[in-house]
Image (cartoon, rainbow, N blue to C red; front, side, top):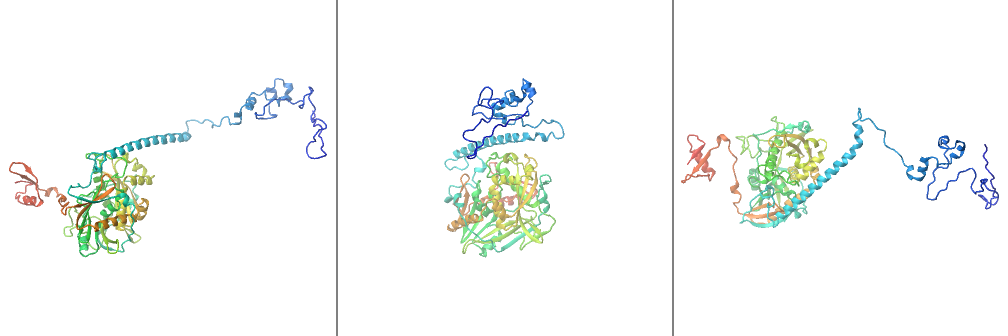
Length: 590
């Protein structure tokens, strides 16, 4: 069979075919039509897409109804149903089935075959968490608006009834005169630069070495928190410090305070609970004191958290119970992580609060590892500030001694924070610290400020948790992490210039007052502090001696003429009554 190409016209005048071809390109059909012969004609519209012109791979004998006409079958797609549908439907250009072949559900790799379902499960978990977060946010908004409505009129602590978090730290007496009130928004704008003291005026006490084995403690290798009955902390206020009295008599400074009092003042904008500082102006001297059993001595728990704690005093998770527990944990932790082998670093003078002859002080049976650095800062031309700063341990690194401060964070119930330390400390330590910064911003800022004031090189933070969420007496150490105070201050956004600006403003305000006694009180419901003028003998009756051991306690019972029992009015009278008991009985009736 031959193939007739036909006559190719020649265009002598230019490119392309001539305007009037001399002869048709292909011979016409026998019927006289204008299209080429022996080629099937299929009408189509311009909106349709043309697919194939000819399919030479078709099985013509199977599809053609007349096998003799197999030559035309390569052009006739009407015989192919699939091709006809493909020509009419655009979906023919898509993949029909892209799924992988089925795999057996059982076998060594069956668990890994379930991975394609993980994104769907993760989306469901994210959606569930989002719904829970919205519910929690709505509940917090209701609690916030309820608290605002109940506190209308400026009455402190009325929203939660007798909730300790909204009570004033000191009872405001009607005879007190309010001199000024300062909102925290004013504190945040202050800034004052104070250079570090070149040297210490005096260093007292002794320090033990830090045990580096506690740096390896983790939730899988936890350490039991021990109890130290013989070692207790001595919290002596400024005016009761014999060293500060001696420095004041020598006119070494104008303002005197302790690191605990200064840190409470420096971090005041982060505080929520109420606290107070007693200010005494004596001549040209200014003493920043604290009351006995003051809130400054106690460590708050979840002070800045959104989740409220139970208000019941009998609950182990109430603010008062947790504060006592956290304070006790902090004291135990600071003594446990030391190498107790008798090797100590001594300084200029011994501990001023321990009787060197008897080896004990009020409430202290054994001298713990603590050193007091009396440091002096220059506030302006003639105004100097002296503060007693605490250091808890010393570390020897390459023959160089470094001072340390030791503090402990405590976990009481993961339900309140949503972060379980035993599961997250190793893998998500940053998330744990971020949660603590959210719930205990003021406490961590005060610890950092105290480390900066004391000139410590390292501050150690311990993570201590309950053995069981309902057991407040037994605890374990899960981890100990060290930070440089300045780096940690930058991490928690604690500005040292702002800290000293707050101190400078309060000192300047108090130096303009006359001689007398004043009290600076943090408002329990509003972000502000108030200054009251109080009587010279205020807070002197709040003092209570430490209880004696049980074998030395004497129960004194006074009976009046009517036979009713009364209380001993004065400690000296009680001692006199006890001394008159010749028989050694523990109860004396007068």
